[in-house]
Length: 297
Image (cartoon, rainbow, N blue to C red; front, side, top):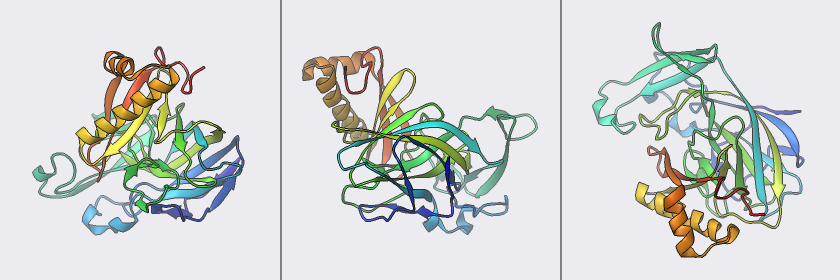
C-alpha cells in the first residue's frame, strides 16, 4: 500500500495544480494529514492570534489518478481513519456562531485515547473521526482549501468518515485529489468554528465511474445518498442542494419534476454540515429505500 506523507500539501485547489503523488485506479492508499493548523499549535499557551492563518487547512496531495479523465466520476471509499494522540480546540473572539461572547482567546489540547476525547477528569466524549477537507481540482477557479464548492474542499461534513464513500465530479485529468483537516469529533454546524482538530492517516481506495456525470460531491453512507452543496447563505445552499437532488431523482428514478419535488419533501432530510466557513455547506439525505442505486438500475 502506498503511503503519502503530509510533507507534500496544497493550500489551493485549481485547474493548474501539479500532482505530488500518482496512483492507479482501484489502488488502496494511506494519506497522512496535518491538523488544520499545520502543526503550529502544540501548547495551550499558543493562541489562534499567534499562528499563521495563511497556511491553515493544508491538504495532502494532489494525487493524480491514472486513467481518470474529465467528466468521469471519482469514487473514494474510506476504509479507515487513524488519528494522532492529541486534538485541539480553540476559542477566539468572533469565531463561530457566538464569537461575540468570547473576550479572551483560549486553547485546549485534548487527549485522544481509548476511543474517547478527554476534556477533563469528568467529561469525555466518543471519538467520531471525519475528514473536513477533501476535494479535486476545480473547473476554472483557484479556491483556497478552507473554502467549499462544487469540487469539494472544506465541506466539514461529519458523515465523511470510516465506511462511507464520496463521489466527485472530475474537472481535470487525473482528478488531483487532496485531503486534510481531520476531526476526532465534530457536530453538525461546527458551531464554535472548530471541531476537535487533529492530524492522522486516512486509508482509502480510488475508483472511477465512466459515462456518468455529477455536478457536485455526493456522499454514500449505509442508509443514504447525501447530496452536498455550498452557498453564500444557508437559504442559497439549501436551494442549490434541492435543485441538484431533484435533477438526480428526475433522471435516475426516473420521475417528472412534480413527483421528484414531492418525494424530496416526503422522504429526504436537510442536514447542515457547517455554517462557519466563507461559504456554508448543507446536504440532503436521500434514503436508499427511495434511490437504491446512485445511478439507477
